[in-house]
Image (cartoon, rainbow, N blue to C red; front, side, top):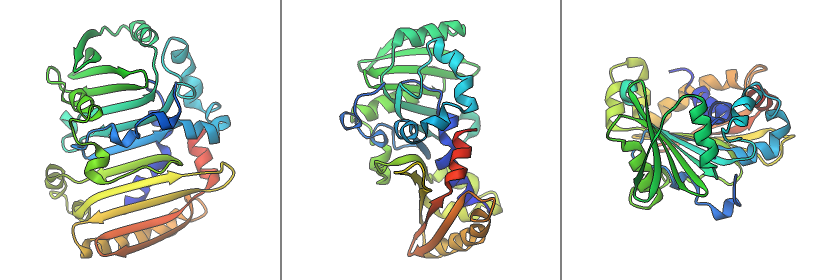
Length: 304
């Protein structure tokens, strides 16, 4: 159980290099729906990356990073450039059964379908076109999973990985975007701040709780209903802000998690830790942790 906070922090802080290589240029953010309203709420995990803000604040570091330099060949072949073509990226996944896990991605910005398909063909990926509720879908199969790319409109692209034939994930995302399926924001109440860099959110489901209950070491986590961690920043030369909010099923569960987190704080704020300051408290069923992410640590993560 040691390490709950580090896991959430690493998800929220370190998602940009991991998720950077996915479709989508960009109208002004005010013209786009909030990214958390575009992903379905019937999932247990969601993560969001604000590429536009990351490159605005830390672009000089990101363009020198290994992952970005390694991506140049793919970008030249038609893969979207995260520095120019993506404003925000959202990912949802169900964690109950890793063997049959599904994942969905929504990219805001715009994408050149012809260039994207040229890139796919250069990697010998054959796609079958179709249409679902007015959305153009390109479908292929990789191993035992179905891969679908959906061109929703000029500013929104989706990618879905799930079971062949049914294509539940793509359908759920399209339903959410078109207002027929409750969004992650609607089901959790989570609203991303305008200055966020990354966010990781976890929602407990009955199925996942049943899986985790078989391991005694994970028992405290089974009492979490919702956890969300965001890293925000306004000035690149200063430490970023980190905020974690965990809602439990009982007051006692929040106190148990508080004790666990407090044991981790000295390590996290030490000389080699990612944070310069962390303060944790629990009120009723809600645990909150607020603090600062060291600028040097954030630069190391982004520039890796």
